[in-house]
Image 1 (cartoon, rainbow, N blue to C red):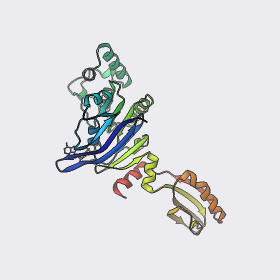
Image 2: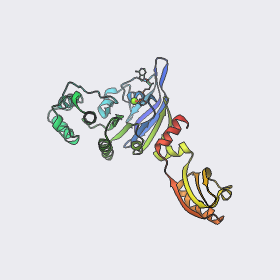
Image 3: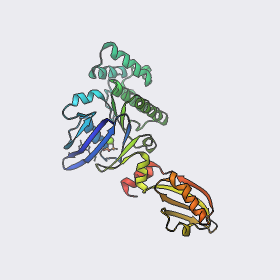
Image 4: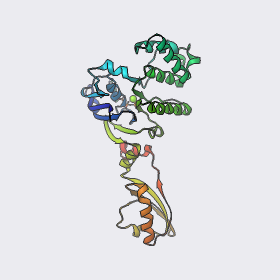
Length: 308
Ligand SMILES: Nc1ncnc2c1ncn2[C@@H]1O[C@H](COP(=O)(O)OP(=O)(O)OP(=O)(O)O)[C@@H](O)[C@H]1O
Ligand SMILES: [Mg+2]
């Protein structure tokens, strides 16, 4: 599998402060990869080094095998970037901004006009084409910024908090776009503070204090945070003696003598529930209900970044 991004031992120091402290990332081509982490974790700094906008103190990045420091122009040609803060010209109109960036990306004449028109339609910007970018609403600014990032049909799209301050319908629209781009083979690196959005990522790297604290699929991250999957059972009586010596850790118990509700930590909920129920029944415990307990990525995130 080709790597869209390979970051090796990336370090960035500002004065004596290490904002990025030895980050390793491998992002496969064609995936939606989420970079998560609390404020100040080093996400934007990492992104800027990946794009060649900031020189690493040490370490290096390859984008589709191209060394970013040595071939910055080539990398910029195949990457689209939507920065965390609106960075287009506020005193130019929507259309003028698109024209300007189209020419910076090397799009010419009819090709540029066609692509601008296409993106204006796609992102519902046509009717606002003569409005100054600085006068757009927050959501419209984000739509324009994404349209501009896509002008030159990049193979890698890097979006830094694209949905910050965006209303729910537009957030959903953005994610539909990301999935559509993925279907067309575009690799996407996205940062977000919305954990429901992060669930949509194929893989996630969780950053904390300049380091990658965890990396994997959303399911793997949750398992890592909790040491397994949680299952909940409602049973008759007290099942605790029957659980003795069985490979599932009891993490919560609530019982009134006649019924109990228990929570267990197991390596894999989908594999554990049937044998667990069977075992309890064999030991004379009647199981009323047994189900996997969904944990949110938010719980995992808080646990991994704060230890709580
Ligand atoms: N140019 C700079 N000079 C000095 N310090 C900086 C600079 N850029 C970033 N930092 C510091 O580096 C740390 C990481 O910042 P960064 O913007 O990468 O975090 P982030 O994970 O993107 O946070 P957020 O979620 O708030 O966007 C912060 O402590 C920030 O203050
Ligand atoms: Mg940031």
